[in-house]
Length: 358
Image (cartoon, rainbow, N blue to C red; front, side, top):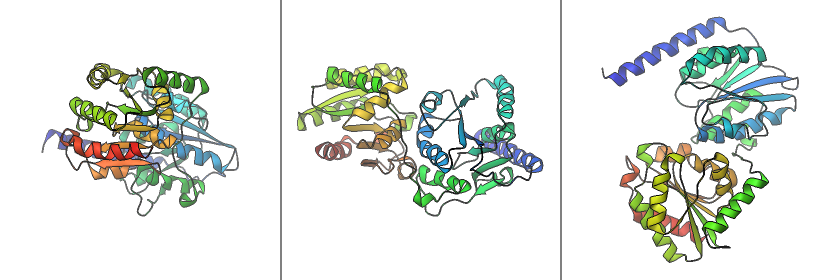
């Protein structure tokens, strides 16, 4: 067995042990009366994109009754975004890199006396989520059935037939709150404050031709196989500017990719816009006419604002699960192991069509 296989086996043993313990300590509860004052904690201790696709769930739960309070347990990466959500009252932060803080967090969660805790992991089971559910002491533990952790849940919600996108899979959780998934709007939403929008408008006017159609290009990707080569970004930007002289192109990327953003902008004679804060890139997506990006959290920002987007995915599975959600644009599937193997010609053809229709 490989080292990776040993790690998976050890994780499986740990998850089964945690489930057995939680099954023994479960208290007969029955779901709360959602029309009474109720505290719900949603676990979202992962990435920015995961938080964005969950905003429809927060909104849906709150729509059930004004007496439901929705809190979220976040990670350091997505806490700032979750604090912007009007449907979320309190954001707790769990930093798995600082395990010594778990005890104080657990005491704080128990002191809040949550009535229900919701596990938002839709695919593989999470040992971290199990630990956090147990730490809350909540009598109702809600999650998706069929992931190998049913014994740990007091409410195992059946998956929705035919659901592929992560948001549609998550919609099943609404049934625990009496919601009809097919009659509920699960689309992500994000807010942009007036000052943030004004700053974005100023940045566009400074970076591009005033009044031009705005094309926002994100050159960063969260994983190596989602990174598109710099030279192909340059080639594509130069080509679309020749074909559409009335557009303005602005480049963004993660703070860690600052040198990459600058290099591409320099070679493509495009504008590089710094985005040191998450609010900066959110506002730029909201005010763009077209977004071009690899698979990353900006995809879900585009869905939230219905900004037309071209998104590059290595595989069809990734596009079906994490692509644009009920939003205009194109999920471009490379059918490749890495986006390094996705040719410029395929991207340019799709981007050309998207810009022409914007």
